[in-house]
Length: 210
Image 1 (spheres, rainbow, N blue to C red):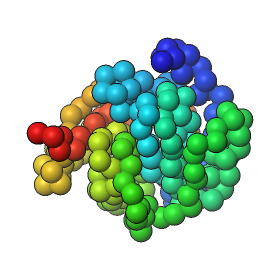
Image 2: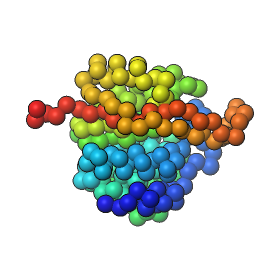
Image 3: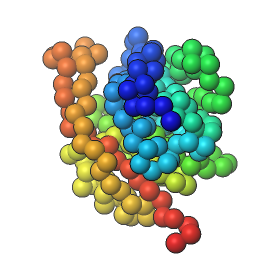
């Protein structure tokens, strides 16, 4: 397996949005955070190598591309924004990735015939445009996976998320507490950047063998 620093360096070459869309709360996942999410998932839990991996709200594809570099058997990258998928496709070509499908779809209406093993996502927090969309993404990720879901959520929503995870029959653990640095990208941003307290969470399905 490639080393963490090597993965982060690779992901710094992933192109990001030139004109992000606030209605989709498009904020790129930094190479620093993405590499640590993915490396942890593989090194601690063996949730990537030889697995089918999905990315909900893939944006420009940093999580999908990182999972591919860590040995994912196949990647499915979903996004509602076709222009984001176009950037993702160009990134795929730059990394010469073939075992990945890009699908233009609204996550709320997503259905899969066959489930995936693992889902990674940095979902919209639902603070600006679509309240509760973070939980819509999370429920969908749990529904389409058989193994684990890795996701970033505001620390302030932790209690609510743990309660919902219990209702949905999955375990939930805080893998790490992060400071998510959001740069000034939209007109309403008054500061150069803002740090948001974010939980890196892992949701695990019950082991069918137990």
